[in-house]
Length: 135
Image 1 (cartoon, rainbow, N blue to C red):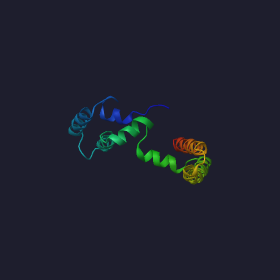
Image 2 (image 1 turned 45 degrees about the vertical axis):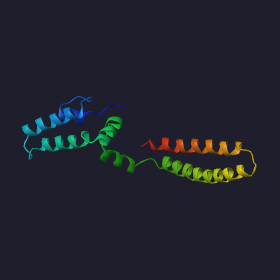
Image 3 (image 1 turned 60 degrees about the vertical axis):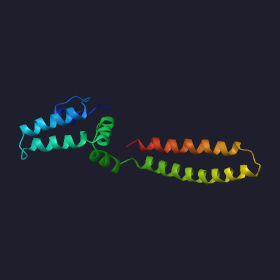
Image 4 (image 1 turned 90 degrees about the horizontal axis):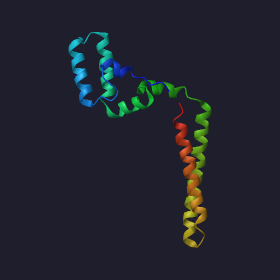
């Protein structure tokens, strides 16, 4: 994936810049551009993303801002959504089976089926979470 660093370039800072460096660059650029300048709106937006730790982390990881991510997920792959839905249903059924096996182990049954059910449920849920990462 090609790294998108436009917001850093707008504020004229490095990607490893600290919060104080980003704030200083923002103040410096605000002094240069009046509020009516279209470039100032871009600078304000870049600062709003890079000054918020969660938005900045999302931007650093994906190279996109929240608006772009929501648009790309809106047109996501229906097959992946269907697979996630099926995995979620199987997980819920597995959780019910696991609960029954958990209760049965107290009446003297072996604990092995319970542990297998827990492991299988974990693999199903991890697979479903991995599918969430695919846009």
